[in-house]
Length: 158
Image 1: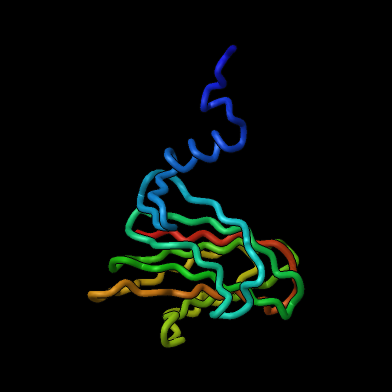
Image 2 (image 1 turned 90 degrees about the vertical axis):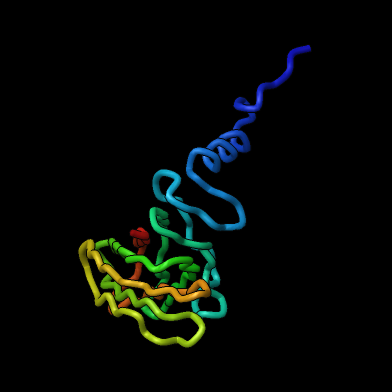
């Protein structure tokens, strides 16, 4: 009888390998372990209470979100826990049919940290985030000014 090797376990083996190589440290937290961690949008995520939690961010970490606004009234919210003071570089790339607006809010208070404006082309917005003794929860909110369709949102902690 021949034993099956762990790396030939198909999808499960591939996911385990991606977690190790991608720098995932468990518990939804990740540091600068090499490359961006991909996330697919999970509905419902229309409000701060239903925001998709992406985990903790520290310098060197990067998340890339593949999302979609199903109609012009749709709102997508993502939440990250910033563990140290850093600059969060937000890149948003909408489909040609969507004019997006991206805002970063302090999750606990709803205070606007930065309105990254709107874009129909790839846009970059650098947001300094100052963290005190306790980590800061930040909500990233994506809305449509016109149109609907897919987008890519990258959060790069520097």
